[in-house]
Image (tube, rainbow, N blue to C red; front, side, top):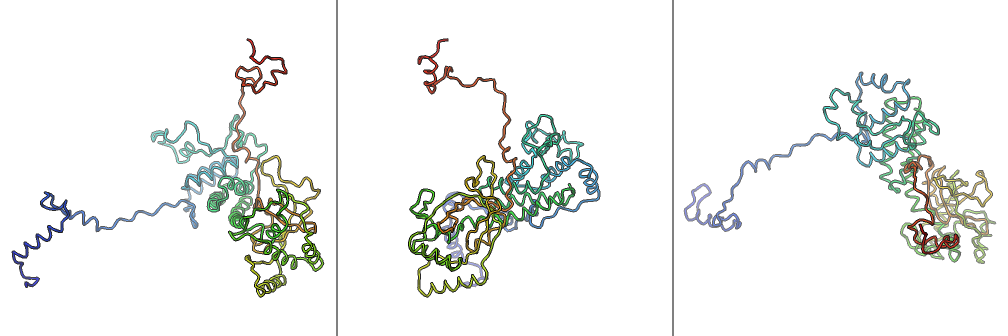
Length: 493
């Protein structure tokens, strides 16, 4: 057998050639007339690593983003030309909006949200007709500064003409308009943004970040120092909005709580349609409460939340089947105080729960210590002519009511939040929240500008109003024809 360094014999080399040919694919076999060709350069390029691309440009919305430092010339331009105190506010804020949009790389969603925010503040962001950027040639931009080019292509403008759209602010007609950064931020975050996205938390936080970024830009560039306190209040609303909306998204799945749920199972079934409770109703995808479980939960809370006389009275009435709902009403309430359970009450709940465990009672839900929610009636303005008010009840805003609720839900609520609820009152002066229809944040503000988003000016119409004498009448006004003595076969001309 030859060594590796010794030359191969002709027989061995011929055998190797036959073996290699047998292992070839049909398309590469010499008999087919196709001989494989190996490109050495292609192999070298495959071995080379791909070059790393350049760093991505900042969008301006990163968590730790900061605007680049200004040169002395840029600072002097902003201080003395763009944002001097003697310049009118509408001119300064218009310049600021255009420069902010030019310096931020917004996505389509961010751009839409920013435009809606500006529209709510009275700034026209609609696209200019017949003045798109495609029609502007490079020759037209020669000799123009960046500011002049920005003025040519910007869509964010404050109208100053005599016959402009009444939907937007006009400094020549400042009636019914006020500069209120905090109010516009609250109205956008509590109404406009929620209606646009339908309550998606991620998209809501995206809108809050856009507004917050713009307000910080105004503050850092000293655009309007006379409104610095108002801008600071608006920034606090942006931070508060993200925390409260996260809590509201959780509350929508938890409210009204197990105490109210047990009360509803015991007393709402078998009443009229307003009291009707769905048999498949439950919390957190758990099994619905049955009568025995609801009776245990209700009895524990009544025994621990009321004094001895009240708890005995409610227990005796329940034992005799005398508890019944005497009133059910839809109310708009505002939270004015939240009272959490103290250590003594928590200890009582722990001892009762331990006692229930020793009796091996099948309680499928966790009995939690309850606190008190002090509320007062309010009016929630939402643009409709019939807001939810308690017109049939002679109560003032100073009068308050108390509802019992689990501690975990009380921690998510904030003083100032508004709720649309259905309240049931028992014949023992005990009230509970049957259902929560809507939760509003503490900074809820409805701006009149909301009603102007789809407003269109009325046009003059010379067309006469519809009449029974019209030739295209399809017989809907047959009774009027008979009353007027007009024959059914039409009108002779």
